[in-house]
Length: 171
Image 1 (tube, rainbow, N blue to C red):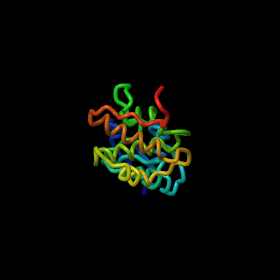
Image 2: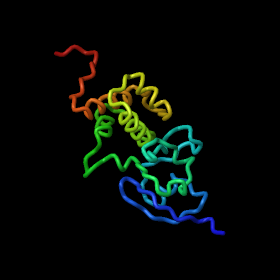
Image 3: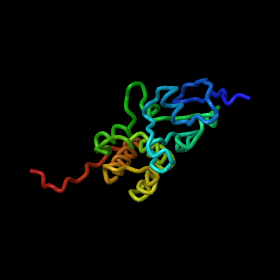
Image 4: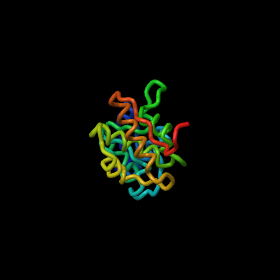
């Protein structure tokens, strides 16, 4: 009996066929076999969220998922956000609002934010905070991440984002 299995997931809109060991983790398949290095490996216990990908539209921890489970699945990694060389509004907002520092949590945070905005295009600050609570960031304090997600939501709805008050008088 072979412990290798044929799988055929669709990743970022492209169908792949591969043979994987039964115990191969999805995060390792994405990074090592497909070369999609945007999915990061963090705690390897499903706690931090750096390995978050969308699996049939739902965020999952790819460090807790076997590659064989992805057979026939539709997967989206952070590389799937950009289109035709253009950053997704979430990526733009994270850049403009400084929603990242070291960047390690960013791919998982972006995919979780994408899922949040797909489910609720007008989230409140509290809903964004609750939605991203499953992904840990050790650098930012989350405020800029929340602001970036809300700015992206406005952009995605076609509304020009409102400037964030700087606390300084114009002069």
